[in-house]
Length: 152
Image (cartoon, rainbow, N blue to C red; front, side):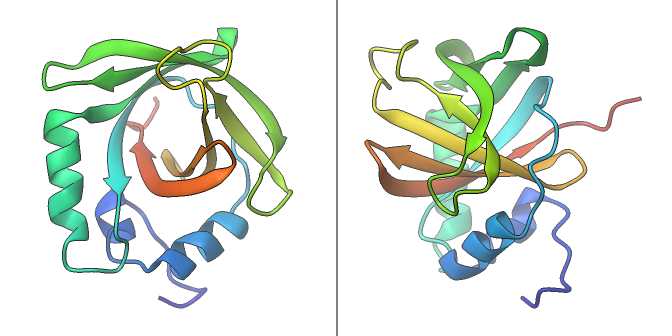
């Protein structure tokens, strides 16, 4: 995809390579801390034929998204097939580990035993669409998308 290409939904992100995802993240503004429920899409093995199938599997059995409480700077993940609200994170602005520019950090280090070593970073790449990077103890793992319904 070229720099002029506009991504408007998670399905389009599943078609991008890792370098294209990284460029999109680096060239996007931080955006506001989201509020409410965002539908999640895991982006694993980006740019391959397997990416959409893996995303569907993860969404069905493991992770469906995140529910943000912007006023209190926290979120809960929607996990397991029945959408359990679990794995809390603190939410705040800080420099990205990827490019040292401001991003929204989803910090599990003081709120979760199971995800203590996880840090997510997100930026808004289109209205209501956020691209995220997952780090495990400073090592990059995967990308993900969060889609929020239009407000109004």
